[in-house]
Length: 266
Figure 1 (cartoon, rainbow, N blue to C red):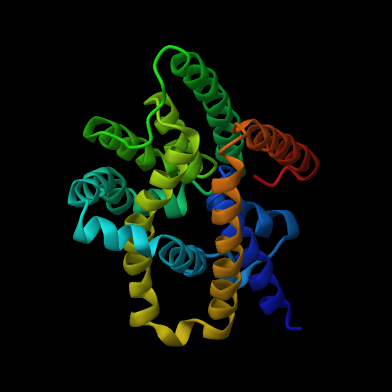
Figure 2: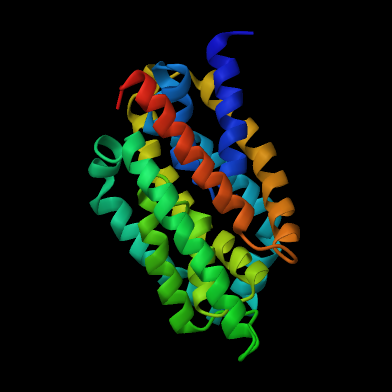
């Protein structure tokens, strides 16, 4: 098997899982090429967006009934999602150059993994304490949606995790864990779609500069693993806290520091 195709499969599988698990897909797409010294097209933001488009299709497959229901019946929830999407959309447009050229650093990822991991643990404790006084809710209010929307904008920083920060924000707003996860996935759909269209301009303008077989391989791998990750996480969070993902974030941060200490290649 061609090495580029093999690497595209690996990164597609990694993207599909880490996009929905609260461990940061962006961080993993940066770290894998860094760990294994992979270069070329698979180590570009354009390829990352191609992988994100695979997870976008996974989201549509899993939640198309919810979108149809919102568009035809529950237009209030549809409006909440659109409003909550605005902060991340504006941040993505305004900070795109910084994200692409400045924030793709293992050092930033280490601090994000640890710092926002601690925040996730705090949200779990806060949610448990508050729900003992006031039962958690299934549906976000307008204020909840705005709060979660602004939190999603922070996910531009590699290592934060879009699902992680939005689920965490939902817990701070007293949403049930699985409800916060579902709202997180619905909220990520227009953001990922927007990013895919925005970055996809490069493919349209200069298609000869890219190998579409590599991009399609990564896309399909991300789609398949994304479907698994969504279904698994929604079941898992009904009865389990985010702790195991936080511990993974801490372990990954230690591994990054260890590799950097040996290679000093930040």
